[in-house]
Image (cartoon, rainbow, N blue to C red; front, top):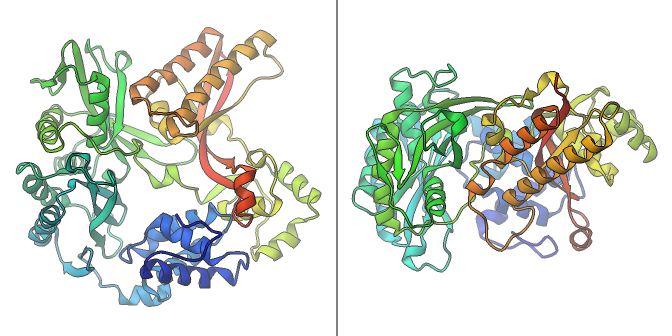
Length: 542
């Protein structure tokens, strides 16, 4: 990322996109600099092929992380300028209706197809051709969004490449129109891509497992484990879960090895086995390694409010097909897996939401202390909102940037217990854990004894430290395998139960304060980094 104390750098498309963004935003926010605009463009890496409405959410979140709050409609217009150099209404007129847009990089060749089957040979040859001309590419990764699919090439360590893990976009497929089922038909096409790459031992198609599962489930009208119907579009918010279940006693007797796409789960499996035991499959779809038994499941997350919904599905044939691909991947990669973060990014969980709850009393006190009143600030910001507990996230971020409080998280309101989930098992907690950087809590201060309070706080702090280590907030010399954290949720829940407490939980926004020495070098940047925290509402059992 470009240092904001230097002049613009990078390729011409980056500079053009940054200039368009800066020109659009600076009239509203004069303190927004061209270097900040270039930082945003480098961070979001637009290709010019993204759907403006989808890219607008990422752009808005990127600006929010720098203390720049714009409306959703303005974000769409800014996205259109960044991506195409035209306003949104013109970009909308220029977009063809129906079918698929396929863009082949690096020369941005554009083809339009009316159906997925028509695009099959183009996608197969594009992916195979890339690997033929880029022998250091041993992994092609599928990245799914609501209206686009990207094929991203990842350099492998096996080839001796200087920049292991470097990613380059190969193909982007965009949906034309607003169809919710536009991915229907993508599964068989990418199965052809997979066969061409993997069966010839050329490269691994990472991310395909979830598309395969969701596509097959949709075609068979499959009902997931919690009674929800699974469709192809669910691939956007789904992830694999690999569990060790030695005694086949159900989910309570199993512990988690990894979650994410298949390549990351295979990496974590090898770390868990320390390379000492070979893996074999079985007729029940489970994998076996010595005395260990591993099962595969698919978790589909339904983001909403503080606690997302969760559907966990399992199919016997899925584990067997994954095993065949795992053995191929070992031959292709030589057991050297490209490094990458494990938690799959899900936009509604990882980025800022459209609205947030505030502690209105504390917010108004902070404004009064800074010499601001509600009406004057609204006029200054060009917004008009009534002072109420639920406010647009962008408005709140802009106000926090204006106030610069030492404890910004005190201005966020805490969710009521009715909107939280009681922790009776660990399934949903394990889903949220990789997406939080710390834990915050509320205790029944009026009725808790001093010894109990000390024990509860110690248990929560240990859990919070584990979250920080897993997310990289606490630097460690070498990342630990995910299985190290597999029992953290259960340990916290059982410790609280032993002390006579229960907990309710949810995911809330959390701002991390940027160190002062970094702010001194770039004083114009937003002084907080956006993140998430697990909020634990702890109370006496019963």
